[in-house]
Length: 449
Ligand SMILES: Cc1ncc(COP(=O)(O)O)c(C=O)c1O
Image 1 (tube, rainbow, N blue to C red):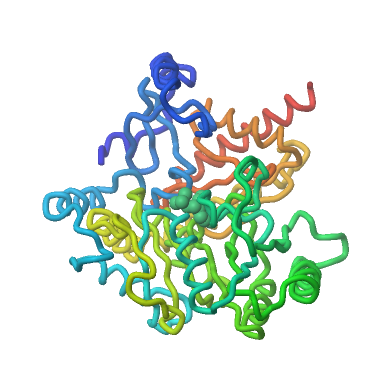
Image 2 (cartoon, rainbow, N blue to C red):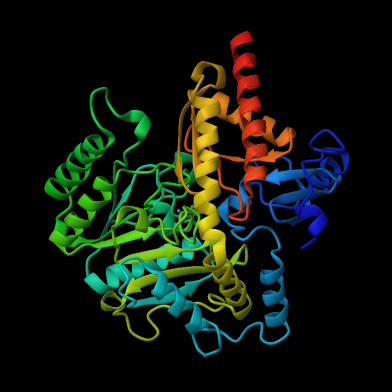
């Protein structure tokens, strides 16, 4: 890792995007798939810690971490060393067919960290979160012999056909791709900004669950004995960084137990220390039957995991596999990542995350009219800032980029702040100042317009 870059402040030497970035983007444009989003025209040359340098020499503060993935910061020296060492020893042999060091160790360490403290989890390693979700769908169906799956509105579980069927955050993800997987149903996920006056968030979430899941689905349309799994993000990511009440997840656990349905937590975004605990599930005291991980697990190397309690991992040899899932180089990055998470980064996510959220609340909620912000929420370094309108959140995200701060939108009108777990309190303060100033400028502009 380049230490000079990691400790650099935000430094803008051209307007963003700079001339070199513009030229390179135009040269590349005819060749990449037009399905790529490119939320703003950032062309990255290198990155270290929480800082990203573009091809024009501009240095930006990264508070999105490659969509919540570079958990240990960009190019952490321990992760880089582990990758380099492994690349010179064994790059690939195929974990589905052969044994090698690291695969078992990673699975063992995940089991030891898993919620519930039972240390009886088995893991199938994948190349991505989407593949982990696919593996969860297959295992749940295979184990239960049932075909139906229930997911939640606002969810994002990936874009392959099965995972896409579960995804319900934006209609454009599904447009033109049907028919999708049969047997998938959706229920409502609570949102703190939609609680009716006079009701608590917990009561509202239980009412939603009773109406949309218990009554509309399990009592009227989907026989519970045919439901293999209920899958959800314990904190919705793409759907708007939504933290549900603990009661909501506890009630879901009860419903699953009552009907022999497997409870699957997609912790692709919320897992691996991001919320200040290894798994977000730990905040709620709810133990799922299957967990899917990816993103932060290997600091940006392509790796995912589908973990299940041993009693549910009943599929036989050859029922599922992958050529490069659990590749030795990605595993080396994951083991180094776990060392760093255990060695203080989870703690840092909790401490700096609380500081960051507290400062955002002070700056943005003290004067909602002046900031355009209606809610600040989240756990650890998974923080969502919801605006009154989509136009506002969109403008703030792109103006932050132009000012050297990388954040991303999620949901309909929320911005997610999900920096590397290495972020310092000083960098968090820079983020808050720049973000709050941008919100105020956009709010003033919106009023003037
Ligand atoms: C909660 C969740 N599940 C699954 C996925 C898909 O993961 P991947 O992009 O690694 O396939 C994502 C990606 O954003 C996600 O946030």
